[in-house]
Every structure is written in structure tokens, then in C-alpha cells.
Length: 221
Length: 245
Image (cartoon, chains in turn yellow, green):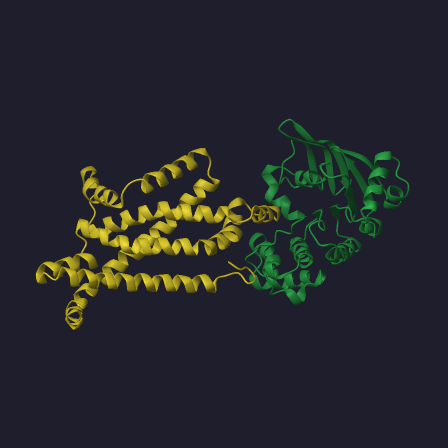
């Protein structure tokens, strides 16, 4: 145990030096995923036939293929048609596009769970569908979606480790380097696992606080 | 005529729910629509503000045709009060009322809230301004929803069975508010079986059955001496159910 503590003290700073990369990828990806996910959800909820079909195809394609394949496609495949991205950008786009498909489904489910009378009442005072969505449905749906969204956020945080495969020097790749240098693979991956669990724990806790803070008085969930 | 409803038909598939309904409402008038359930009363109200557009027929507000092209603007003038209130669940009573003026009439938040407070006072809900819908009784929610309608300064308010989702002891507070609005000169078209309200506040009762208007007349005549047998039978049923107050 004291060996592990000594190991951790020595190598933790190296792992944490990649924390900004890991967190940066995560935040950018989740923001891309939320923005695009919201558009996709709106398209599937209220779009015409073509919009609906496009949004649905997007969701099915990105949910139906492995994240690693998507990332390889963007990083190794796109240069063949002239789109060359650095590893960090490619990873952010891959994780963001993938997350959008899942977030779209969470948003869509949450909007559909709002009682129909809310939309009808908003339309009845003269709101357009988009005004009703923005002022009445989304404020309620976004509150409801927090628990699922929290899962997605944690998943994406862990997915940033896949960016190792295209050479982003994030935390997992740092751990691997330390492993090859010291041959203490057991200790180093245990250490990086602990870092991930602390991070995801913090994220879960923050979102839980957000959920409580934004809960609607009188409504028990 | 402020509201002129002309020959409204409404079909759902093969079933014709409204078979040519016409009625008029002058400014300041209150009319109550009665009739057995399944007669198309609620459908008629929804056809008027196109929450459920009619299959054929026209509705004019102050001489202007209500159609898809002007519907959002028209709905600001033709307010709707629902049977099940439909208050915005994430907003306080005050913000429920302030929402329309703020988002649709471009009022500043402070100004909209001031107006909302006045409308809440009008329905006796000012002390509950900060409460959320889930914290209010049905009667209180309905009064807030009436305030929400009033805040848009509409030309006419359509009430779709505003007391039928309420426990009997809660209908009184809503009926009292509606009577006050009628005497304040608010133009109202009310689908309701509250005969007491009709007697005290309505300028006319419209009796509907089977998608038609069967008869229309002043409350004392319709209640006291209906011309049509169907109207009399229906009023007897209502009386047996103890709804005459």
C-alpha cells in the first residue's frame, strides 16, 4: 500500500498534466453534442418528412456504429477526401457527433413526456410552435432530462480515453507511457482508474445539485 | 358582431361532429352553450380558435376572417380557458400570467409582472402569486388560468367546461370569478352546465345536440320555458344530477 502511495505521488502529476486535454475534449464534445442533439430532437419531433428522415438516419447511424470506428473514420478516413484534422479536433468531433445522437434521443423523450396540454395552452395564447418549445416545453424537458443527461456526460468523459487510439495525449495515454517506462502496469492503470472515478463522481454530484436546484416546487420526482 | 361563427362543419374521418353551427356574439355579451356530452360543444370552441380547424365554415372576429395565416395574432385576441387548466407547470402563478404579455407583446419583465399581479388580483389569487401550479388546488389553478387569459387583453374569452374537472366544493370560486368578468363587460362564450351561472350571468343560452344548435334564447326562457322538447328533457336530467344551483 505504501508502495502504491509512493508510486502515485511520483506519477500522478504526469497523469494530471493531461487533465486539461481530457476535460477540454469532454466539454467541447458535450457542448457540440447538446447543440446538435437539440436540433436533431426538434427535427424528429416537429420536422416535416424529410427533416424527420434525415434526423432519424443520423441518430441510427451514429448509435449503430462503434465510437472507435467513427473516430478512425474522421481522423484516418477524411484526409482521403481532403479534410485533415489534428487528433484533438478529430476526437472532439467524433465524440461530439456520437453524443449528439444519444442526447437527441434523451431530449426527444423528455419533450414527449411533457403533458400535451402544455403545448396546446402555449399555442392557445398565440405562440408559434417554436416559441412554445422554447418558452414552455424545453424549460420543463431540460429539467426532466438531467438524470439521463448525467449518464451521458459521464459516458462521454470516459469515452475521451478512446482518443488515445488516434494519438491524443490525454490521461490514458499518459498512463500507458508511464506503464512502459516503469513496467508497473497494475499500479498505473489502477491510479488512472481512480482519477476517472473521482472525476465522474464530481460530475454526477454537480448534476445532482443542478437537478435539485432546478426542481419545480410542489412537483415530486 | 364581434364574433361571427358561420356554418361550421367538423368531420373526424367519416364522423361529422359539427353539422353546420352558426352563432354570433356581440361585444360585452356572455353566452353559455349547453347540451349532452358528445354533442360537439368543445369541438366548436376549438374550431373557433383553430386549435382544431373546422372542415368547413368561417369565423370572423370584428369582421376579420380567422385563418391559418393570422392565427397566432388572432389567438391573442381570442383567449381560451381549458377544462383542465393547463397552467405552465414550471412557472409560478405570476409568471404564468406574465408569460404571454412578455413573450408575445414584447412587454418588459417588470411591466408584465405588474400587469400579471393586477390580473391575479382580479381573480382573487394575488396572495398565491409565488405558488407553482402543483401547489394550488384545482379551483385556484383555474382562476390563475383565467388571469392568464385576461392578461392578453383579449376581445373574447372561450371557456371550455371550466368547472367540470373540479370537485364540487371548488366550482363556486371559479363561477364567482366568471360572473364578475361577465358583469365587467368581458365578452365570453362559455361551454358549461352551471345553470346558476347561466341564469345570473348569461345574455343567452345556446342549446346544442347532435352537432346542431337546437335553440337559443335568454336564460329565463330556455330554463323556464324551453320551446324544444329536447331542451326540456336535457334540463330535467341536469336538474336530477343536482347541478342547478
